[in-house]
Amino acid sequence: MDPEILEDWGRRLRGLLVAVGLLFAILFLRLFHLQITTAADYAKESEDNRIEHRRVKAPRGLILDRDGEVLARNRASYSISLIRSNKEDDARSVAALEEAIGEPVRYHRRNSNIRLKRDVDFETVAIVEEKLRGDGYPLHVDIEPQRDYPHGDLAAHIVGYMGELQEDEAAAARVRYQPGDYVGKTGLEKVYEDRLRGIDGVRYVETDARGRIKNERPFPDRERAPLPGHDLRLTLDLDIQRAAARAMPDSLAGSVVALDARTGAVLAMLSQPSFDPNVFVSYREQDQRRQLIQDGHRPLLNRAISGEYPPGSTLKLVAAVAALEAGITDTLSTFAACAGSLQVGDVVFRCNNRSGHGELNLLDATASSCNIYFNHLALILGMETWYEYGQRFGFGIPTGVDLDPEERAGTLPDRQYHIERDGWVTGHLMNLVIGQGYMLVTPLQVARYAAALGNGGILVTPHFYGNAPPTQKIEGVTPETWHIVKLGMHRVVYGDNGTGKRARVAGIDLAGKSGTAQKPPRLNDDAWFIAFAPFDDPEIAVAVVVEDGGGGGATAAPIAGAVIEAYLADRLRRNPEMAATNDSTLSESEL
Ligand SMILES: [Zn+2]
Image 1 (cartoon, helix red, strand yellow):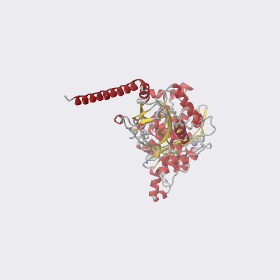
Image 2 (cartoon, protein in one colour):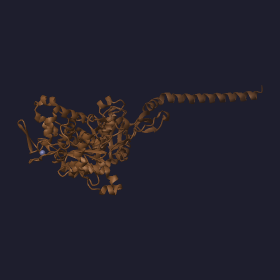
Image 3 (cartoon, protein in one colour):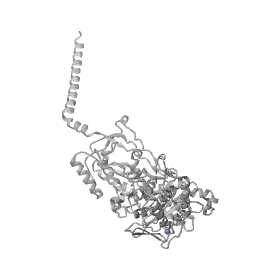
């Protein structure tokens, strides 16, 4: 071989060896660097970069009235959360937030993502975003849906409100809630929670140790979109609800209930005083909330279903139906003339007309609400028969309205009830037939009773949502009996001595019954009125009670009229002739 070529090979080989050697050296150095020098850094980074599981709140369904007016909706609200690290750092972050906003912060270590402050204003958002996060505190601002009730106190007792889930509720719930979640606490928000709430979604974010987002969507395939809750379109008509609220004296407590007399659909349900449900969902209104809970006028009580009142003379029609069926009276027969009082045993019962009504038949006794006539009638009727008819009209048991479990049963006392308390005397029945004594009713029970009187004895089940529940026919009462009682109620509004003239509405033929219930030790009586319209084929039934309102005919009757007018307002507008019709004047010859 040519020595020159050999030398060349030798050079090349040396060069290659040097190159390979250098390469190994570099690799070795890199390996050394990786394994020894930066090992600690790498370990730290992989520990602190983490995947967070974030819940995407499902939008809650809206609550709407029958025409689609919104009663409950969702608005965006800002909340401040803490990305948890260790106990000391968490405490430092909470303290920094408290100092920056000048308010205490509620803090409990439970979730990885803890809400510290909810529904904060823009100023607080700015402080957190610009100052605290800039200083490295692991806080972040979330936007979450917040419940909003645009009509405030107008239908507060029906719609109810939401509140933070308590631990015992979380345990009892079938679905998984998290601490701090809002759930329906009262009213329809509570009853229809499962329907309204929807199903939350899930997404993931990758963050560093300080809560800064490194990757918005590390696992798009594993995300789940939220399933919105269902809207709740109610039977309620806000126009009628507004009419009831307007007609009710502002200074007095009470309730107005309007039902569809055929189906039991609740058209209006007012309870006064009321409250603004927004106070309960906002985190800014703690003082107002405390005030409402402590208020002696009990604005949170839904008087329509939880208020228990003596019904006064509105109840006389139970005895009227019973007496007609028992053949004790007919339309025109009379009892001994009312002289203003009646002595039974040692007790003297008085009529509302102290100088006496004289001789009355059933229609006129109903119209003028003569106590003595109904006392006579009760003496013949007896306790057991009266009680049986009280039961048939649904007194003493809840109506089953879908506002359970707030609904009260009232009291329909039987003979035994009295024996167990203060012994039985006939005087108890004298009180019961005129809606006094131990008898207690809810305004909703009375509205259903009014509907049954108007619709020929169909006991409806009041409801706010969904298909009408089955109705129940009051058995054993003839159409003639229903007709006679209706005529008596017609005379209450249109008769010369009727106590309910102030319920009249131009163009609408209606019927009703007043009540003025004594409720010692209160100074003033509770004013009652029940009504249904149109007279021939009733569509709406109304019950009104005004606490301390005095006479039912004076105070409650015009409210019932205003509610009926609101219900038929469209029809009156479309038919000017109907509106111009004079008040009906049915005579006994039409019987
Ligand atoms: Zn009388």
